[in-house]
Length: 102
Image 1: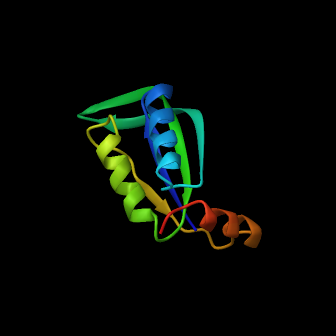
Image 2: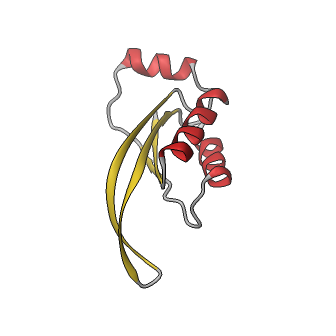
């Protein structure tokens, strides 16, 4: 299992990227939550609300998912972070593998 994290500037773009990834079977589950982000951008400190997206996918689906995020993301420099959990419940992992294409 792999988890991919990104952020979007608004709920509409976050939902579109999430739903498209599920429809294409690039992820089995996606969580979206509103967060406050403070970061440096082009010489300024930004303080804004964003939508954090957490995709759950398989190791084989990871590259296709990251490519899809890059192509469909509204940001000039999208955050795309890959996480490999140390432990995943076996039944959850089985369900995940059934819902992501190879």
